[in-house]
Amino acid sequence: MGKQLWTEEEIDLLKRLYPDTPMEEITKTLRRSVDQVRTKVKKLKLRRSKSFIASQRKRYAQFTI
Image (tube, rainbow, N blue to C red; front, top):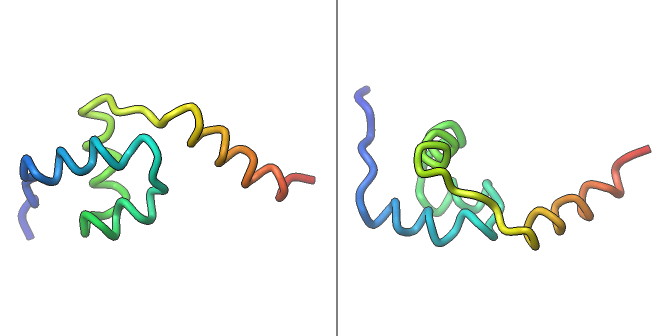
């Protein structure tokens, strides 16, 4: 199976979703693997929003001992 090229529409959607959307939702929406999304995110130098990072820290803090 060859590489699945990213369309401009997919890239635009990724840029809109990535800052504030969980990875699971992004991969389902784009029908891409986590590895594909992470590779494209790195290439595009996208970053999570501060509010998203804070919400994730708060969410996972409950699991720490």
